Amino acid sequence: MHNKYTLNIIPGDGIGKEVVPVSLKVLEKLSEKFDFQLKFKFFDYSCDYYLKHGAMMDKDGMKKLADCDAILLGAVGMPNVPDHISLWGLLIPIRRAFDQYVNLRPVKSLKGINGVLKEKKNIDYLIVRENSEGEYSDLGGIIYPDTENEMVIQHSVFSKKGTERIVKYAFELAHHRKKTLTSATKSNGIIHSMIFWDNIFENISKQNPKVITSKFHIDILCAQVVKNPDWFDVIVASNLFGDILSDLGPVCTGGMGIAPSANLNPEGKFPSMFEPVHGSAPDIYGKNIANPIATIWSCVMMLEYLGEKEAAAHLFACIEKITESTKTTPDLGGSLTTTQVGESIIELL
Ligand code: ATP
Ligand code: MG
Figure 1 (cartoon, rainbow, N blue to C red):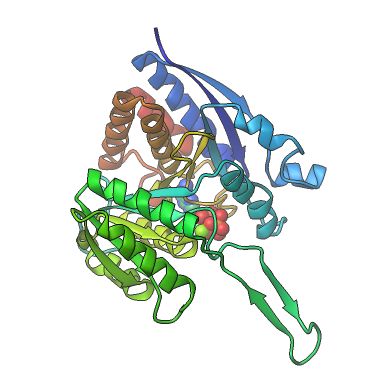
Figure 2: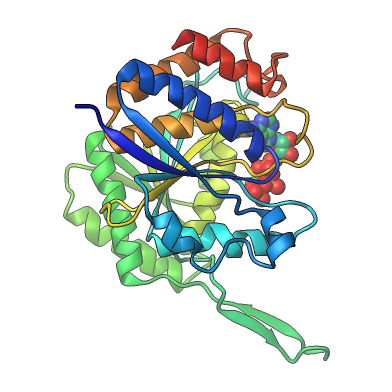
């Protein structure tokens, strides 16, 4: 008997609408080869949806989205809709409603691609970003508006539960990799939340004596992931620091066109969501030149999560065959279109 999976698909905005259909064709082909079944359910939640309906999704949208084995998202955001609307109207509510508190972002050199670094480095580390709280908070506001004392307060929220669970997840991953774990902090300047973070990290490290740990302030960590990326294997970071690291990492390995991510609810109580790290890239939208690899690689992560490990490994190998060749989009120096890269991968499958 073959496995069946229902996937809820949100192409979203901009290049999301180009890279997602291409990725789905790849998935369909893969499912034939590896004998599993996929059912796609499409959702048009996006900035266009917002402009028509005044909200990024309908009222019972979250309920509809919950009914699946996994969610695949392209990107949301367009220049004619403020960023906070697309972010707080769709992405963050999904991550929070489904308790996707782990944002996993692999940074890995692919065969044949150099990032911005002059010498080729063998980069392979995993960013574990806290995805449910931290600096991304709607607590705060303006005090004394329109006076000379006007000021704004922006709170961060670091709960014991939230910090412990992400740090524990990172230790668990470290056990399955090279048994080294780095914590991103800034406890010299941010003395409440980051000291709290450090203390929890230290406590949990005592329960995991086999994992070698290190702690870097985010500023020097940014320098070292560029200069000495081989020092790192798993890096655990707060919501904001993790976000910064996960644009910096891919630029060293080949750019946003190849950066995948997973928003995980590790307990499996709610669906997890897979999406490229990049946004809707309005500057290149409509030209059919967006690199679909970030999304296809996110599908690799989805297949691993669903338990289709063999299919995932095969798809990843095909991605590397593409990056090794010149069959790439312009961001990687090739001249193929989004659609053609998808077709090349399908041929390889
Ligand atoms: P967000 O706020 O959603 O993170 P952003 O403003 O950081 O979005 P992105 O959309 O992530 O911007 O992209 C930044 C730039 O990188 C784009 O303008 C585009 O030129 C390039 N880029 C992003 N994704 C891709 C891709 N898949 N293929 C090729 N180039 C890309
Ligand atoms: Mg960005």
